[in-house]
Length: 82
Image (cartoon, rainbow, N blue to C red; front, side, top):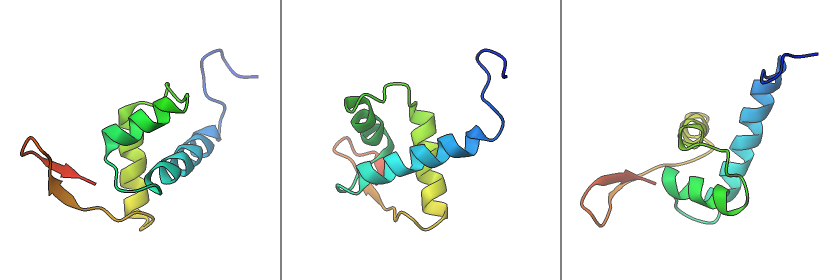
């Protein structure tokens, strides 16, 4: 039995795998960036998924060649990664 508030041993990998699948599902609909991906997850009731978690997942998925990314200028002139 675990301590209240602690994550049981071995479930961190399971949790990151589940987040990765959810992120892949969101970006399968088209180009997206981290903030928009987080907002899409929020709109589906996953309000506890932080932007940091989404950005970590996007980076991990790109590193595993599961995602392609590109940089483009946003309307405000700032570089944004899609």
